[in-house]
Image (cartoon, rainbow, N blue to C red; front, side, top):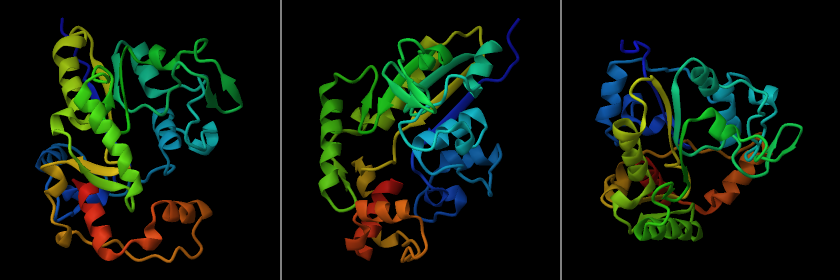
Length: 271
């Protein structure tokens, strides 16, 4: 008898705001597949990030608890193994669980901080206990299964040269097929067709590191959007804003960026 429980696919992009999507009113970028998905599903108009940083946000999402409550208040702090997480619950109820892409929430096989102490991951291999199938990716096009591919390695190495440019942007000379987003899509397809157990429902976290900084993309995508058509964000003098926000402003060299540069970088980020 075929299992009637639904398969669950969580697709996550990193550091992407709703204003970059056509379904939320972006007139420059067209995302017809996402619009089609939205038409057949639910679009949230008042959803808010619990904590605007990678590890706290992801940890909050998977535990259903405030980042302040679980003590994950900075990047590189991971979920305490004592916390109950969504994929853990699903696995206990017969789901095959998979992570494909960026993690930054579940502890791996290194010494990793979590609230209260440092844990030796050899004694608490949470990531591979929670997920049956693991294919990780890093920022800059490194994906498990392709890490030794010469073109992917070259794309990764080039992406790090972007940081010397204002706001860290550029056009990656690699072929799209050798860049991280494409490779993760290929990995997901291979999982569905060849790797997963067809007798079980699956929960898969497909986690794209892009469009997180550095803002870079290969052609034809890097030139797909005309910078002149990209709207500018509101001006903000940061008066009364948190010190961390002011530091990030300087780190991104926003104090030296003119409107032309901002439009160009936003175009690449959107692509």
